[in-house]
Length: 149
Image (cartoon, rainbow, N blue to C red; front, top):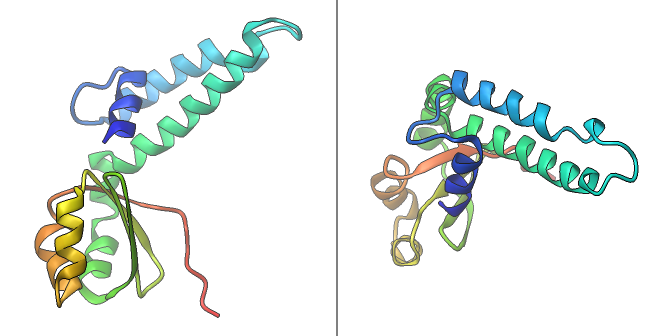
């Protein structure tokens, strides 16, 4: 959640992430902080490189959790959570990462440790996740693909 809020603040996004507004803000920030804008030896060139990387990462992250992106990928997501079991999962901070048997991986934001403990102690992890995780937390598909041996 900290990461989401940090990126929303960077792009001046209040509540819902709207792709049109996000794209406009992204373009303005890139124009302002593009490293080529600064001459070699300029003290702000290094700062511009760091900020431009942060802007690019933030943009791609916010696009991945935008309602339009979620809606466009809803059919594939529903197929995965309905027909694929959980192959692996990890929890760090408030981030739960679930890898499914079909090879796709999703990150769920804001999952507290007590919820995670209830999930791992459940005798039916997939059923617990269907009832308590999938529809209750902001999620995004990660680019990581599990390769089969």
